[in-house]
Image (cartoon, rainbow, N blue to C red; front, side, top):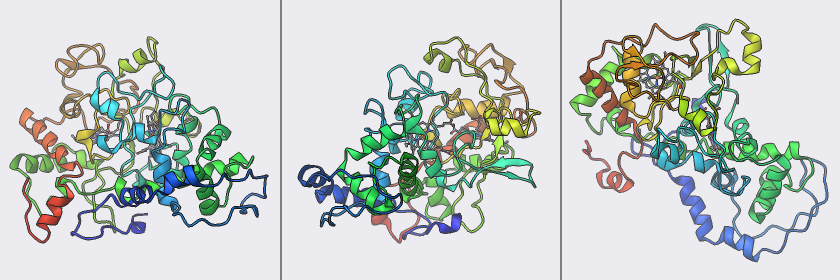
Length: 439
Ligand code: HEC
Ligand code: HEC
């Protein structure tokens, strides 16, 4: 899967992203999208045609540019119309400004650890993951050698691929809350650009009654946009460091050393690039129970006293059936740490508001005292609450790392070098061929 990616255009190991943004804004600037909806003749109603063929009644080709699959995916990703109240799209919970997580949670990590949905008063039950670098997760599978599940999309890996993942949110009542696939396709068919693009690019008509044939093409289009460089910029300060174009501060270097050594972070958040690929992904896509405590704020947002424990991987009916011993309970997918500085809160339930807090948890989970819950003022200061799922907690690699306060701070400083867009493009242009750059 790594080999499919063509890597970067120029500038050594550093990506130049934004290609789709440029092309699509080009399309919009050329008046394509607007012209389609304003000046295009109405598209004649289609009668049902054999699935997979382009109906003979298709209007003649137009001169105006049409999006390709990637650009169509971009438009769909950013479209708020595909939600019950036309107010929520993928971009709402996965925005570039927040490292492709929910900017509302990033701005208020304690009050809003989970995302508000399209319907007022509805909230999700898990912290929105980053959609960046998600394309690198292999299909969900059991690794016999290491006796662990690996890969998939979502905290529990329940979708195999990005195109399988993308068909879920529009129909999730806590997210985009559309009543059904048909309703989604009706919304899409309101846009003449979409109507023609789906016909031309996927050979399906949004107005066909065979919704099970047509709806997956929505996921396919988004699934062709998400593997683009937009979602995998690899242009953090750390990438410049690895490319030999900049030096890290002594504190950041100490953090990197601890990350790969005493603090054991590298055991799961791999800092070496995978085989045949130039860039580290900071996850091995395996699953673990870190012993995260309940985040009581989620129940509060749902207006209830408590929610049933989130068993993660073990809560999937298929996994529960295969492992009746509960050996997968409480396990969640290892997250990438790229852009982690801009994606608070942390953990599948967002129980940690800051990087300092989660690093302190890794260091002292088993050595600090105990407090009642995460709302306790002593949370992370005098103690940690019990784990939400007590089975399978990883005691071997975390919980008592013996790090000093300075060492914890160094790890946090290192994590902050993983934020993309470390330098803007003009910086790069101005310094092309020069080394090293300094911030
Ligand atoms: C209301 C907020 C919300 C909306 C809207 C939303 N997502 Fe998500 N997204 C989440 C949450 C929460 C998770 C984690 C859910 C889980 O694990 O159960 C997630 C997980 C993901 C993941 C998995 C990442 C990984 O590393 O496993 C991808 C990819 C993703 N979303 C893409 C999308 C796309 C594409 C859309 C639009 C079709 C979308 N999301 C709409 C909140 C949202
Ligand atoms: C044994 C494997 C393992 C080790 C070792 C490990 N992590 Fe993690 N990390 C995980 C898993 C699994 C998750 C997601 C767990 C969850 O949310 O329940 C995670 C989540 C995180 C998150 C939150 C990610 C997000 O998107 O919310 C941060 C930050 C993090 N780890 C940093 C570190 C640091 C720093 C270290 C070293 C001190 C470290 N990890 C060591 C497995 C590990």
